[in-house]
Image (cartoon, rainbow over all chains, first blue to last red):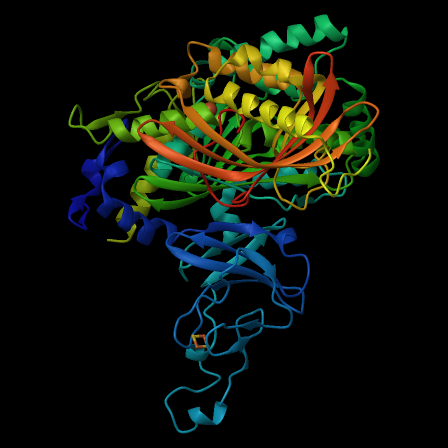
Length: 438
Length: 169
Ligand code: FES
Ligand SMILES: [Fe+2]
């Protein structure tokens, strides 16, 4: 039994159901920040957000405000956004270029992009004091660990735990699939971050990402509307409607279609949903792109890359990635009932413009603040969070296809795409993190 | 298009443009969806860029960038009985002001007009507030003005969004 922080993890999480307190209790939230978000690897940003020396971008790891910066030596650093002098934020703005050094607005202590001291005014005032300029107390504190996988930067506020690649495990496919689809083997961020606040617990969002039963129900109105406009477009112009409409009309597919997908769960809560509608169209743009890919990789390898059939990857607890469309949503919990998502998309380096336009169309239709898709998801998340505060029941059900998953070497494969296996897998990891800190 | 830096449009034109802007706002405030698309030319666009510095909408991220087909899709969606986030529906109230006519084409009567807006939106027991500026490129037609391009710049465009926008501001 893991009794800690005034509650019992074993009693909150059962294999097929979890207690509502996991979502609504502020004490549970605080412990999650401490034991999960401040322990595991958390996505910080993409290296291309800070292409030049002096560039920085700020974000959050759990409750900590962090800076990702690029040093003169080209290296990327992850620092706490805190001046070691009297504690001011070093970068109050979201992003920018600090030039040679960060300069604190309060008393002008200056720091190189790796956080080391560059200059401190009235330095002799520190002679014979307990603060030495080369002590860690004088510099900006870096994250305990940071690392990059194919340009995607993660950091951990804990010195212990598996290294980044081991921790990512099977979820590396999110970044491999995205980067491999670029003829140059890497992606570049489009420097625009949509930030959308969800009025619900962060786990409700992650549980939705691989929920293949919900699209045709939650998004029915959009699916139906898009299908009608597709027909209208053809009638009125005599041409095929833009492919991007299909990203929306797909939501009107009967839910049996989504059942052909398959979910795979990895250690640490990561999961993937395999199968993608319309992944490999045969239009001239796609064919041109495939020719570029074959030139870059050779026919066999190119076909292997293009054949990867991923719909969605969850990097628990911080990311939802749609690699075939180069989209990424980072999860920043703000409180038990508030979650910020930072939404980015990427360009496949070396790919024709038309391929970028698909990522852009998805970014617009699904992920922008005018989304006709997430509007209904966010409504449902809010609605769940409201209902979970009621005494009308204590449990959240993840029973669908429970007991039917197959597990080999810690990798769990679901019997159907609509299984609630990904949610069960996330809570398995949640329980491990929460118990480990006790 | 001829410039009118000194505001040399007739009082009549000024008034007609203002009336048009007010009526457009009213269509949104009253959710008169049948009247929305006819406000635009057939190739009209509604555009809300992600930054005030943005000078084009094609091929770059936008908050809104919609032609008649996409606007029609949005109307069809919010009119669907199972558009969950429209139950209850949201309501808006616009105030449009500071209308300045930047240009009037002496031949066609086409207009470029700037204005400012405040919008309160109510939904699910909560009020939200939006403010910013409009830029309207209007075509003068037999049936009155129609929008070729409406650009909408929000003052807090890069800020975090509490929820999303379900239709146009
Ligand atoms: S608080 Fe930063 S220099 Fe004093
Ligand atoms: Fe959804």
